[in-house]
Length: 429
View 1: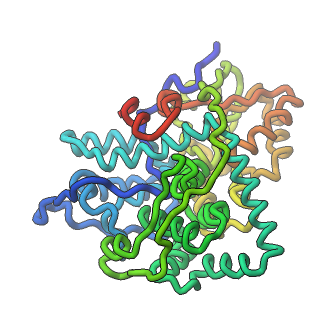
View 2: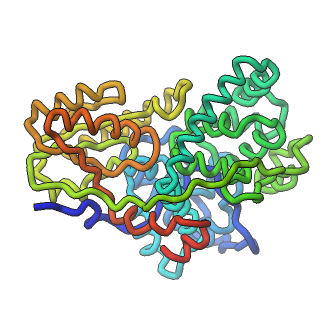
View 3: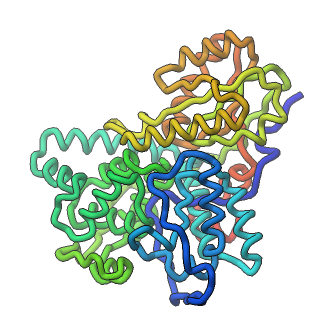
């Protein structure tokens, strides 16, 4: 019997882990006497377990409506006005479906600002799924920029100062150090940082995106890459984001007011977007003995397991593939903890974990189990997807099929990511 991957799976939401846009229009004012005004500081570093993610979700839910809409752009100590859920959602320790269901239940009158931001990750992933060449071009751009660092001493010095938080630019240096020390940044700070990196420091945008992806515990290939492109004017041609001292001062409680920022944000130029390919529809699996393979991009296979003849469980990581440089220890540790938690929740805490250098060992493991197929959640464009492409022929050589099962969330939403976000939002919300 063939089972359609994605026929079962939750609703449609996600938190944007990349650089996000500020809210537009009038500032909303929540009731200052409401119980939603108090929220625990963002736990940094976050605990890489589903239980910790659910606890954070419960803490944030009372604030998901007007309180979030009014003050979400404020980058203040402790980050009291944002959800901070992205590290858990990034790896699907807590799923998008759970977040959207919980928010709608808590706020039946609506929480549109939060839900709109939640949709950005889904949009970015769907957009990149249909244009994977953009990820390949970004990776090539990182390598080209690193080659420039090797021969251009002036560029290398500016880049080193930017990464170390030693530029002398108020706010920017704080965010660089905060990112390295905590593995997280407020969404608005990410946007200011990217703008200053590109337009004031005149550094290659790919190096900035790489800096984020090496250090962010919620770093996502689609959200991170496309958000940097958005700031640079590459995603929406001609439309850039320019950081200003006034906006930074306003939204940091006056903590920072940088001087000497670029007054003009000239968009970077490209030939244009590649033509989109069809969005993935998922692959079918058979009712045969199978190895269920979790991976760091999607650690929720609870909707797959009941429909599968599971003969074994394993996990795959590709954290080192996020960058040609060294990925931060905090990122690697968060992924390792998240994987361990997921394996335990899926029934085998002792299941083996393989990395992208251990694909032959993974294929041999599947062969020893005597399985006919390996079933895994669909991996969106990025290092895990690239690793699975290398695994597929190794399995086939052993008579084993690799099946990527696409959740209903992704299957229903991604095809609408054909143009800009607002057309996408109209189709899915």
